[in-house]
Length: 208
Image (cartoon, rainbow, N blue to C red; front, side):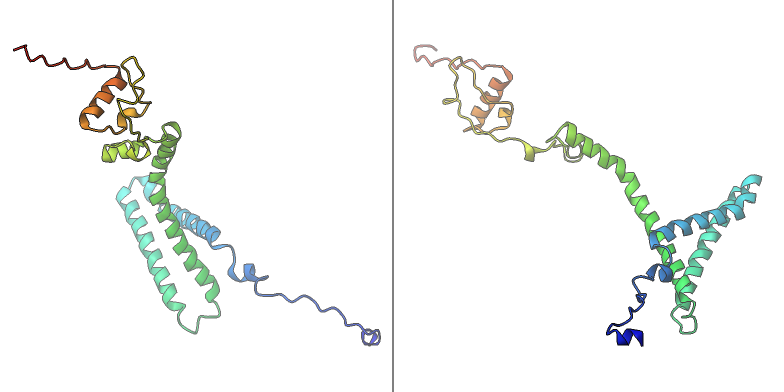
């Protein structure tokens, strides 16, 4: 009555939305739950099969691990089939989270098996690109080519680029350039290596 006489309305308590209570409905995040579920499975298998390890029954230990893996897969399959029925919907949320955590743990293990062997190669390729840019050891091993795409292509002419002392300035990558003909390219490579080819003698018609 006091609120109505004053012309104002009493503040309503904040409503708890679904987004605000989702952590209580779904539990821990699925990735964290996958880590905990995997750790609990390993601890459980180790506690149950530790006797076989201490007595030296290696075959029994392997058989127990295979049995543990098979029973876990069977229970996951049965739980997924059970959750499709209507009579278990009241307690389905923990079971759904348990199944999804196991599935994510399986995907995480598969990703680790795929990524970890390739991680050293990725680091080596990155180090190679940092130390020797333009020369890929990966292409050199697979394709016998250190990376022809990154090379500089330069067109030169022996007549115009003559410096006067008989040498030709081709630059550091001139040996990969193009000349007017194969003979000119061969002479350019020799000039770049410092092996100056002698000029061909003039033809004398009187000489036999």
